[in-house]
Length: 107
Image 1 (cartoon, rainbow, N blue to C red):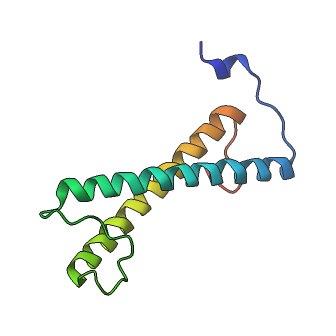
Image 2: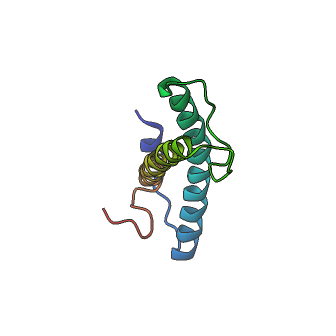
């Protein structure tokens, strides 16, 4: 039997629910951002045709345009996917814990 089946859903006030969801979604975003940066950097190393490290600052004039654009595309896709995954995971966890959708998230 799942642990959540043993615990009844707790009724929360609207303010408490909104604050709780903000905390959960913020923590999820921070964790997702850290994981995404590491995954994108690892993918960069695995897929890069050269031994060029991911640029710390692609706007730096010492980074050539090709590398800067490639990193911007990789980072943009990675951040977008990471954000989607972390938001959906947070919402699923919220629903499992409370028995209802997070505030402002349509089901």
